[in-house]
Length: 367
Image 1 (cartoon, rainbow, N blue to C red):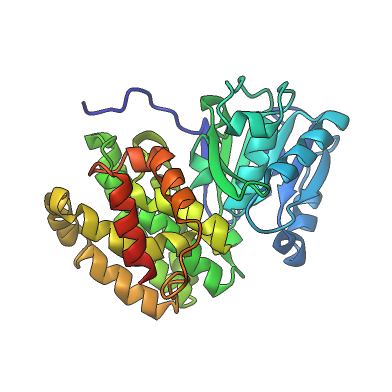
Image 2 (cartoon, helix red, strand yellow):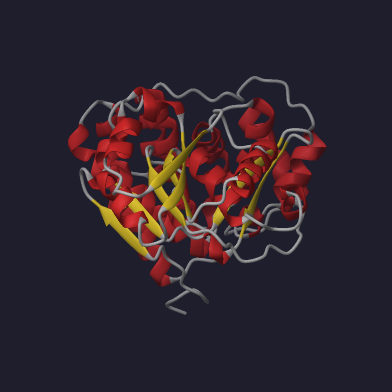
């Protein structure tokens, strides 16, 4: 099949420098009252004040500051409660992947009858009632282009996604100016997430020619732009942001692989940036999959102008990214194996994965 069984993209996407100034005007199509979810950096950079100043007459904008780190079930519940106490017509997320996932989950479950934990455990999710606007300030997760929100249950030390087709943002704003001031370490880690997502969606067993074309486009764009943006070249910011967005479109339809199956339980326990966890798991997963994706690797070597693994190794060193797992004691092994095998990402891996395979991958990652 050329296409996946269902195509689901954001209803509208605005791209270009300065596009974030249109947020208020565009949001007016959904109603005059909104809530903006953002990180601390937005206010520190003066952008929050500019967004308020650009609101049309008669529009009211409430704000919610993400506490930092990856979004937890408790924070989603707190934001849901605030939305119920202060009804709005729309929710906007201007921030990194954690900010977007937080807003996506809270807006998506607005008015839903059960706690977030129940939906993370598999309860049927009702259709979202609030439109979501997403404007990423990092280039990495691609959450602005997916129906997925990745959430952490702190009590169970469990990182797991919830998803529903209605979670797809109604409006996406890709403004490369929002990447300005992003710390190099964040550029590196989030960019590695985008790179691995583009690669895994390309080789996923759920890939089709359509999604593979998106994945390859994203992979080439990210591989070119990420080192440049990390080095301070803002002229490549749009390429990196758009590459991350396209990788999000690809993975939303094709799923990923065992790198993400591993990165979630490991990231939840070692409290490391998700992109760094993905990059650290990638070489072992690539070695595991190599014999079944040999043709893919040969094709991508031509597209990228170098071997995928060589690019990763070179740029991990260039961007001073060091595996947080190498040489560490491996605790909760059985739980990590079980969570990896239960992951939908692992199920989409190009090679079937057994419990023994996960054990071998963990030994390689931690040795």
